[in-house]
Length: 61
Image 1: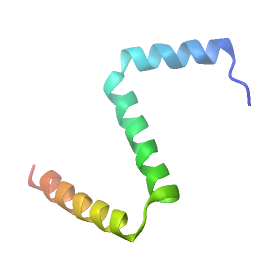
Image 2 (image 1 turned 180 degrees about the vertical axis):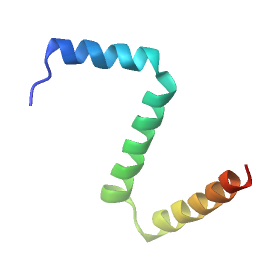
Image 3 (image 1 turned 60 degrees about the vertical axis):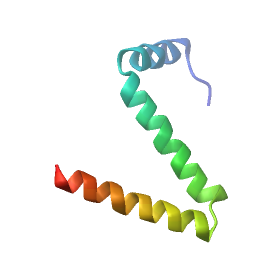
Image 4 (image 1 turned 90 degrees about the vertical axis):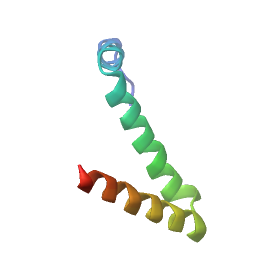
């Protein structure tokens, strides 16, 4: 599916105006790709531990 010039311009404008949101979106996308395509059991175990630690940090706030 081709992206129109208007859509490309709108996307660039959004990324410029919301850099942190764009970074978070890309990081989430990379994480999903890693999990679906590359992770083995050891990698998934490590991610589960990191997720557990992060959830605890967020719950303390």
